[in-house]
Amino acid sequence: MTETKTTQGNNPAMSRRVFVGGLAALAGMGGAGLDITKAFAQATGSAQKIADHFSSVKTMAGEFVQFGPRGEQTGGKFYIRRPGRIRFNYEAPSPMRVIADGKSVVIGNMKLKTWDIYPLSKTPLNLLLSERIDLTGKMVRGVKEESDLITIVLGDRSIFGDSTITMMFDPKTYDLRQWTITDAQKKDTSVMIFNVQTGMALDDKVFKIPYDEVRNKGR
Image (cartoon, rainbow, N blue to C red; front, side, top):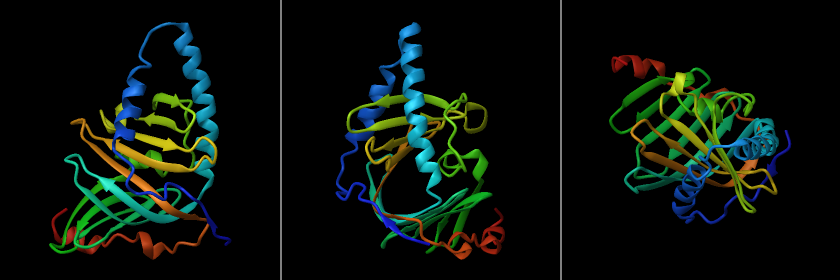
């Protein structure tokens, strides 16, 4: 399969102010009235085109920088295969791994050999990794269009509770730049991706969860 290299965010030092600013701008959309409703519908229509483009990318791989809720910063490599599969390999000294195999998500500490496991369908990552991101339903919490950024906030209260995922796209190339997962405690974990390649073959082994180790830990 042909590989296509994209040029998304080659500077990993992008400030968290982008994330905070995007969320603040979305909060400013909260006024009542028909004009707001129309504007939101129009924005959602434009955003759906971008979401469709992103959904059409079946495989991705590249580098990431993650910003934790306490400002901690880590990096590494990531792999995505739609639907439902993702892997984060954190660079040393972090011992962490995150793997989703289409059904479950595990967070593993390779040094301590400990694992936490969750149903993928109960996490916001399920929206990011779905076969198609449908913005016509109730999951859309907000859409913000700017000249250099399209910000989409998704959440499903009946499944994820108060957790949301905020995705940010380049409005010209439709490339995903970054995402932020906000948990029920309103704590953000932000991931910026760069040096991204698409269209490569990714083996099932990349997304294999070591269920024997998980079960041995009583999970």
